[in-house]
Picture (cartoon, rainbow, N blue to C red):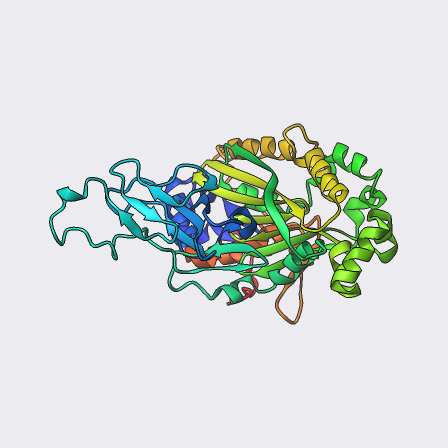
Length: 432
């Protein structure tokens, strides 16, 4: 195989298969992306009470999130300061201290070292309780309860990073009369597939495959939402929101369709709570949103992508509920979610089969390129630098790779694919 130089591996219209199959590149991705930018950690509804905790990962780094006695949120590396064992093995729970299973070093909810096993074995000055706490992750922030963190001291400020995404998170949360949601209280799915993490990142906003791969699901959904019959021709778009974030609009309802889709009492409740404009924005829009590199927000769930190897990925799907909504509304959300994403659903299982098949296809090293050129020539850029294209095109798949190339320090080679693709020049990067 004619292997391109590293700088030629990712371009606006194509990625080289090495980006999905090379273990060395995977290790660089952990270092330069997952340990260098903002990643999703949890939602604050997952630790509502004093003593609640959740464990998760930033790349391979184990972390623990707690709510301490002052109801403050704390985020730590899940690693004993003594010999390095994780101090908490459970995914979620409630406790007042974390005790390392190796030598009983004991930590409080704020991460401070409280006690060590067999303390008389230490001489004076060998233990500094003030220093030997759990390593705190200083840089974390949240928006509407969604918590993100970075291990980097030089990553852009979170307020700048989240940028254009705020509007869509507002739409999502404002579907609750209180403006609040819960994450994971009504169910969590855990999947693994034998493929690279970027396949799920791309697939979370994939509009091109829906009409074929999920045709049976579309036919059934069209009974309740007739406009789904016209899915490929809907006047909706996908957007590159900058910094690798992107969104695909699944549909946008008219005022008349809002009242066909939602009970009038629910529409009235949202209008009373938020005002007409905010309420209608929440009711009209259905979308899939990606925050690069590991988070997706879909109509009924939060999706978290965890890379474990170059060809192994874990995906956790946390169902969301609307605080203050009628019980039947949240039950409906559960049932509609199960219909498409459940283990026996009409959609989600198909996607994971496809992801496995994609990775197997990448073993054909003589076919070197993965294409993202659909709609590139007709892509629009507005005065704010936001790119957009029709929802079955690939603007949203191209979006993460502008940020990917920046973080990985990969330059597009305008000449390398000149004979392969009709238009290989890279556009101006959004966000700087």
